[in-house]
Length: 397
Image (tube, rainbow, N blue to C red):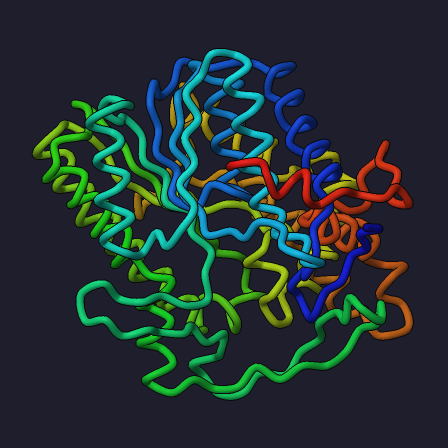
């Protein structure tokens, strides 16, 4: 089967296994060639198959303290003419690389929101893994079945201050278009907080505590995004912002609990704007990202997921140079938020239109990053080669 990129809006529908493998190897090579740190011994990453979650797992295993890891994700393997998801292959290739170096790398594929998954993971920790000293919460999902009330909630990417009209990119047709972000209802806000807020993170930490599978001094972090004023309409003042405020509130509550019980820590890390499964789908945001990439690449400060994540652990979480704001958030987005960077982005934002957006932004870089989410546009891969999906279907994540 010849596998080509197919996508709808900001969602890739296909994945190329050889491209995914190459990208996992590239991230591993980066951290191995960088400085290392003395970090976690055993880590649980909830949302581990792509983006910041995958980068976290790679940094810990190959650039930290040779961390044993458990990764949880909801992915699909190849079936018939369906290629399966990129995260399915990322899980497989990470596990292969980690086990070659004598590390434990257990993958759980299923619904991380469910009580059954929590029970299954805790059972494994008790029987085969050993107590965990780091928990990362990095789930990206548009829906969640609440394990308590049994209701399924679907998040809504909407405004809370009235309809917002702004530019976004049509990746399929390589054009700049105007998009309307509608105003949210109270139900929209509630559902988004249910899916993207801190409720499930809290359920995980309390379940782990009750089962006594967290080490003394255990730490937990969730990833978030704050962004500049340009993005406030879709983030800070949107349904996402309501969810992220709930996430931050949860962090403070968990921090009190972990500090009291284990002398541990809970916090959020505000990460840089990048192309991830979650961010590529958000209206209007892609235009800001294309301009940001342009400015930061010219300045020499642009980072991808692995560069940013490794710096977060090397310098901040396990290093001597943490950047923590007054709200207690770790801020590896500091390079994005530098005044000169934002001034230049604001200047370009005023100029961008459907005729010049490819020239004054890094649209080409943004789209390449988007396609690489599925293992496409990777150097050294022959995309005209026939891929035997049945061979990959036999591999177990």
